[in-house]
Image (tube, rainbow, N blue to C red; front, side, top):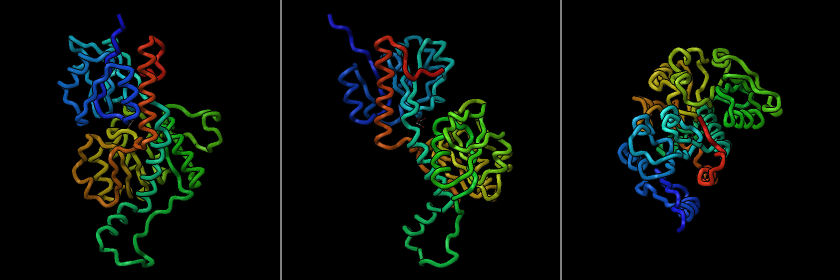
Length: 324
Ligand code: DGY
């Protein structure tokens, strides 16, 4: 008798090439509607699948993970951040969790750079002006903006993505790099990047651009709020490609409205896809729809990384990217 195939459930559509391989290897179900699943749909999936593959938009709560008829033994997350999964409840239920680190580093760093340049150089405003048909032509004081080259970039959380972004900014744009976080990096880790470790307050006071790259944890929730924003220079810009709830979004709206800081570039939000009141009315913020890892190459690599975790699980081998 042949062994039953592992049951795997994808909560969203994945790149087609990865879905194809998965459907050949597993008993695969996919949420083909590709809209966010409800709590009860997630509950049904957890009762059916050996492996559930959630994304950032699926809240895998303690309530879901304490259900009586839970079949799932692995949560193979499609993404590096896993703050949408209640890790304590997963541990309690004996469910392993994996993520997809490394493969999205460069793509996400590129979006941080895009946001930095766009907010400093007013690219969003300029694009809207051209499209509006109201552009009257070049003149010497038109849409003056902030030059980036040689300025100071403060990175909060110098992990893989923070480090990749710091390298792009230093070696590409001659920026000086400050960083803060739980500990300093060794010379080997910095690999020739001149970056100075300092505390958060000094970083906020000294930087022309502050970019968030720390994980979303209870400790980093609302790290950027009215008090910490007030420490930044009035001409400084904030970049967030990490997680929305690191920033108190309505405090940020006030800070941008009243000139506490000059601008911001955001790819992530506290209650995606909803935005804080007033954010879209501000000209001095560039808003992207959580697309940091969104290149074809990277999304395929993320799928392959999750697949490697599932294959290891199926074979009873150590999971390459277990977290928690
Ligand atoms: C990540 O990998 O964390 C991206 O933000 C998508 O979840």
